[in-house]
Amino acid sequence: MDQPSPKTIYENLNDLEKVDIVTSARYRQLAQAVLADTSINETLRQNIAERLQQANHLLAIKTVDGDESY
Image 1 (cartoon, helix red, strand yellow):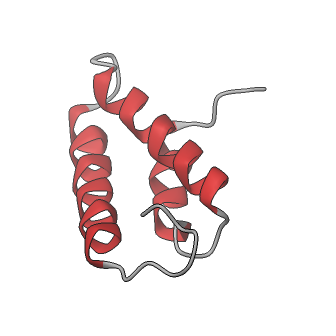
Image 2: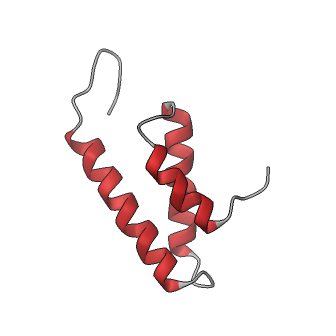
């Protein structure tokens, strides 16, 4: 599978609430990989970090139902 561009990864972070849990986890994993890659533009990495932090905050305050683990 091809690695999406950092810009696509940034955009995907907007869709975390619209996709299934596995896809959401994959988007987060890809974002973490971008954050660790110093060859990627620092401003884009900062934007991804901010969007990921916001998404993680929303996840942390979300009420879980039934068998959900988070």
